[in-house]
Image (cartoon, rainbow, N blue to C red):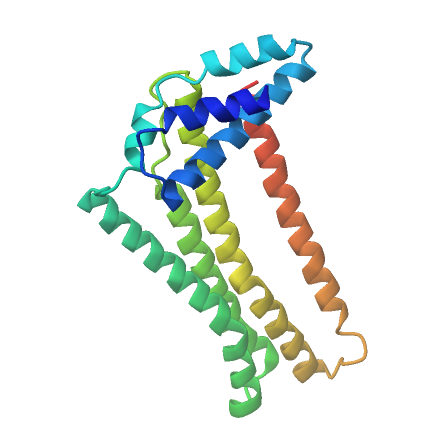
Length: 225
């Protein structure tokens, strides 16, 4: 039945030129349908019943297909909004990266007391975090126009891209901050013999972040069951 689902998707895109964006869309759509099909099987439906349920719930694919046809012109307002959002993320990441090294410079080169020298780091981190929070709160969420699988898939796709972007932004700065804290602790307290524990704590923080994301994804999946 999974082959039939795959064939259904391929037939729906027969009049569309095969591009990277088209292939990515088909792969994402197939994975989404496969997950729903397996859920139906686990709920006790037969293979044919699960297939019919998944296919009947797809809805109109024409808008999705049109979105990946070439050429695709993005509205100027959306382009400007994406530029602003990207700029805010870039500034936040730069603040995260600079913050620990600024503290190290203040301690080593200028001779400021470690307690006072740490204040700029926390201020920069707070500003960067504020930018990311503002970015997330002002982003317009996709609102499905009906209950079909296509509308649900569009919403899922938007949320997935936003989550991946946020995670990459977080990871790009996280380890730089950990390294900065490691250096500051050693410079201030000469704790080389046991300060490596900071990296273990840092790794634990990564797993916590991944767990939070997975929990959120599970809650989103439950919402549609």
